[in-house]
Length: 412
Ligand code: RNT
Ligand code: ZN
Image 1: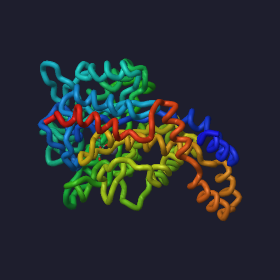
Image 2: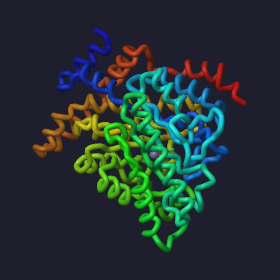
Image 3: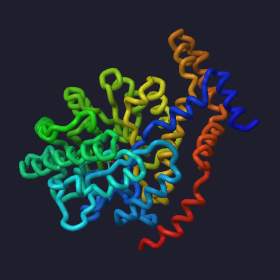
Image 4: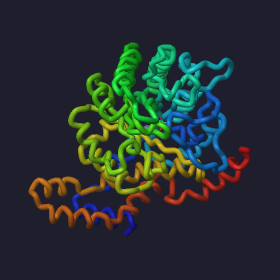
């Protein structure tokens, strides 16, 4: 008997169908962030990252051009099984001739990405880029008291809606457009309300452009603080939650954007009570929003379990968001995205019905015992079966090292 067949029997004894789990897991789209490949630099600016976020490390091989980034994405994708989307930022516009500023970018500046997606049969998601740009004034964009600055960024948002709709129409897959602004203050503000009122007004102005709501979903991402913006963040959890719910948008939680003892896994169900759709940025914060590579850790598993247990796989947009420049960037991509999928499989293999029944009965003794029993089930055999059905193996490092030696080291 193969290891998989034996594992299948062990799970079946707990009432878990491994074939069904494999099938469901493979079909869940994971939106993969393009910015792991080039340290969030993009192609439209001077090359320094602002907005209170930071990439650390100088491992060789950063993608410097659209061609390099696309080649690296292909390499990563070849080692990542399952349904994928590619998540782009506006700063990844590709200019052939004349450059366009953020308030005048158009669909044609993303045609190469659309061709890339179509050739691979995948969907695209999008993010306006409210950082790394000279029009960010005093760390403010959509909340700026300077009308020239605020209007510039409103126009950027409006351009991005048009581009998102173009993505959806061209690829045939809906596009999630996620708005995140870094706006905030390093030190204690005298007025917390005015910037938030301006953020609200700016969002209203952006969203007043007509767009097809069956093709473009708009999410707003909250945050607690950024580097250099420790005292106040305009787009807080409460602001974002209230705005998205009032306007029928998608609230998006990044699990690096809360105080370290707060868990996004505990928040998902609350949002599901009141929202048809919820967005997630899956990341790993170490002491702060450090955006380390996603591991198969308890919180990643618990977040995926909350989606699966609540039967919300078609209600939650799952995207990755991390950036590590201290290790091979392609390996970082593969490790992190595979771990989201591993966690999804782990979640689908939970004997959830039985555990929910124990909770309802108040039998917390059996619930704890079963929960611990589960931890040593032969999960790895199911995961390896999935990889081998996709022509992949758990170990991929030799392949990445070969690409590093052939391609990455030559980027000097
Ligand atoms: C920043 C947010 C945001 C960015 C990307 C690049 O803290 O998480 O999602 O990481 O837009
Ligand atoms: Zn994020």
